Image (tube, rainbow, N blue to C red):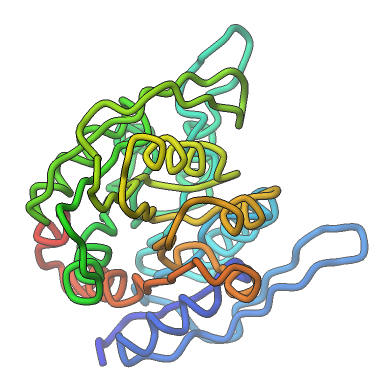
Length: 314
């Protein structure tokens, strides 16, 4: 059990935090998070944390605004209670897709989130698979940016049997991710030529690469409405792919995504538990959830012990 360390969690993903605590061999610090009738959040840390190295596990997923406010208030409470160092462990960084101005008079929301977390009192951030790696530069504090690829790779190599595997990027922006992943599993790559017509609305144009008679995995950092993923799956099937799988780190799965996946050409959708999805698993048997708790626990241990974290950046 590491000494001088405390692990806390808001309400966003307590099961993940509980798994991390088991890997570390330390209990979750008792924290009360309640909501008043008018919607205001009240935080109470029910343990002494003075002089401790504190890690707060709180993905800013749905309900994003509520979870962000919980995180900020917990950080402020820890700062005022004289924690030695506060690390915000944010497995899924909400507002990460709003990382630049794409039209006039819009905010750069992910930059604002970074400022809020820093001003609240966080000394460090630990996160997984940011939508855009440059978001690290929005923070004026150290950011440890991990990747879920080792977890996905371990499952694919040990539990799956593929024939002539092709890793598919759902758009041009994900080619580097697909190429790196394909190299690790000794597979080729293909690219979906996609045009986005509006927010959360995309149209697949064609498949660039040979998928005829081959197993394919559509690789992305997140699946939200699943529109892109299911259109890509159908495009691959139309191009002669034998089987189509999907894999992503963050299963946002909003709107009608579950119905779309259930009725799609996808054989299986491999996701991680950066975002809680227990209620969705019950209605979608195609979902396979992998835990990233051991990855987070090892990163937390190394940060606390001031040892290298770089070997986890793969």
